[in-house]
Image 1: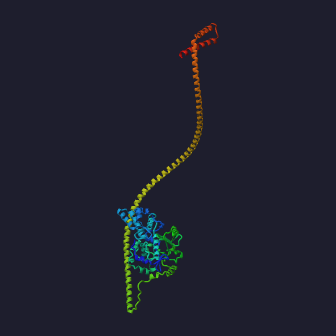
Image 2: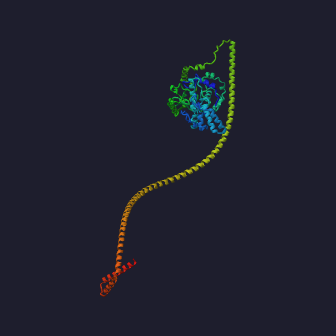
Image 3: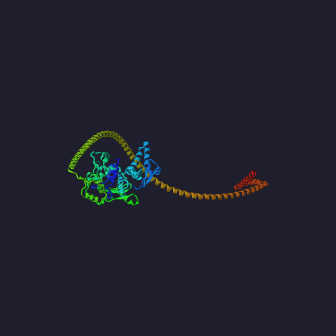
Amino acid sequence: MAEVSTEAIASLAQYYDRSLRCFTFGDFQLSPMVEEFEEILGCPLGGRKPYLFSRFYPSLARISKIVQISAQELDHRKQVENGVVGVPRRCLEAKARILAGRGEWAPFIDILAFLIFGGVLFPNVDGLVDLAAIDAFLAFHDRKESSIVAILADLYDTFDRRCEKSSTRIVCCTPALYVWLVSHLFCQEVIHACLLESHRSCTEKKEASWDRLLASKEGASVNWFPRWKEGRTGVLISCRGFPNVPLMGTRGCISYNPVLAIRQLGNPMRGAPQEEELAPIIARGFNNTNAEALQKVRKAWEMVQKKDKELRGSNNGPIGGYRRLLKAHMQGLDWLPSLRTPKGVEVEALEEDEEVQALRAELEKAQTFKEKFKSTALKIRKENAELRDVNIATTKALEQEAKRDRREEHGRNKFRGALWSSNNELKLRREERDQLRVDSLILKDELRICLRSKRSLSLQLCETETNMLAIISKYQEELNLATAHEHKVADEYARVYVEKEARGRVIDSLHQETTIWMDRFALTLNGSQELPRLLAKAKAMADTYSAPEEIHRLLSYCQHMIDLMAHIIRNH
């Protein structure tokens, strides 16, 4: 970044016009613009979202992951000064030196970016990296949001606060402001591709007396359209719901008026702007009182309005109503005439005789000749330097072109190889894709078959379940019948058993009685020997007299019974 002249910034601060949020110098005005700071800081908005402070600081745990310092240590080292919460710079610098010693360059670069955001882009308290600046860095690091809007908002906010209290420090991105001021005040013949190279090659800024330079500056001598702005198209004129451009920084919101500064981007002033286009928008801080206004500003940046062809023209000088507006506006500024009055004591001109007047005329002619010679020499010197620079630039360009050709050839070769590999890979991927499609169709068919089988099995299962329930019901009835039959059989068995016991008792009684009768018969049989004899006589008589067959059977039966009883008696 460029070395800053504090005298230049202090002198510039005296010309801040709070009512219009610009710098008024008499017959012209200058306003830092979004497009200019995009080029100066090398961070164009393009398709990016602008960083808009969310009113919430990032957590220490999130910060610790990037700076590789524990959240507990960050909480211990955290400081609060004048209501500003931040991390001491010396803590981050010490950690950066440790990481550089280890060769861990990725976290080292992140900490270095922390220091740049906290000390250059969003300075607030000396020796402290504000948490708001860290939040801006994290928005750029994680979501690639541009910080241009916030940087410009803090710049305008600083000068606006200084108008309220002249002792207020100028706390903003002063390097970018200084480069912007130099680019408009000094014209350079040598064209540089880089803005910072053009700034460094400007030797007039080192010799300038800034108070006198700004007091004597006129619109005709301002470098309205520096060469490095060529090729830019479109001017941001307003945002949705606002007549101008609302800016949100780390300390609040403030607007600036692009219609007063379109000459700075190569467009002519087409008359006096309307009053509503200059309406001020100022919201200090992020308290609940400003919550609605802040939310409106955030939504406004979702739709921005740019103009290009409508603003183009060949004349860069102020014309028409704008000049009258500026003249009328200057009459209400009580501080501008005092700044434009030459400093020093006024000396009354002494009366001079003719000889002195002649000598003065000769001196003026000599001075004029000297100035012409000096300007011619300076022009020749500049042309020589320009030719030398062109020669050097041409040589470097040829070398760069040769190197670029070699790199491009090498890149083409690598690209061919990569393309061939990619082609083979794509071929394999296509084959895999086709196979997957075939497998997918097969699986779909199998899935349909499985679904049909599932439905069929589900029906069979329902039918089987119904049959099983019927069978279970049938067997339950049979079981109940079997149980009843079992109880019946058990009762019958009990009855039979009782009858058996009764019969046993009867048989035992009969046996006893039979024994008794057998004993009695035996006694009878043994006591009378006449029974066999009488039976033998009866048989003889039956044979003699031809007795009937029934008589013979009876006699045989009686003989049999006698033999049986004799046998039983013998065995008993």
